[in-house]
Length: 108
Image (cartoon, rainbow, N blue to C red; front, side):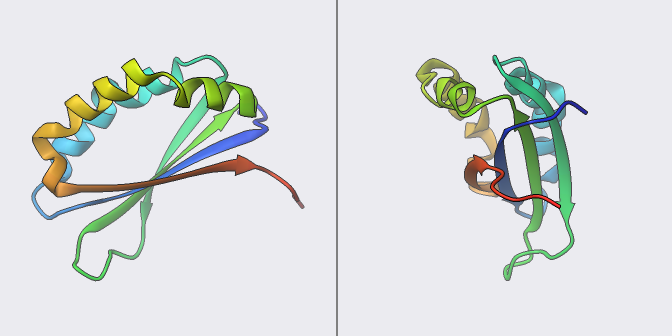
């Protein structure tokens, strides 16, 4: 795995009955399309052990990125983000997403 200097973390929850559709979208091209963006090095998807209080399954994706500049470039790509929003519309009521990003400021 290549060293990343910047990370994008996407945490998401899926309602009961929606997991297959969301995972098909992620594995069917979404994750690969994000990974093709300049400076994106790798991605790992996690199944988070604890569901949320309503029982929705919890997941996460961790993207390793070369630099803050590459992340900023990705976030400024309005056309790409509009495309992703359209793709999520069929299951929008079964999916909640939060994102955060940052640089490593300490490591052991």
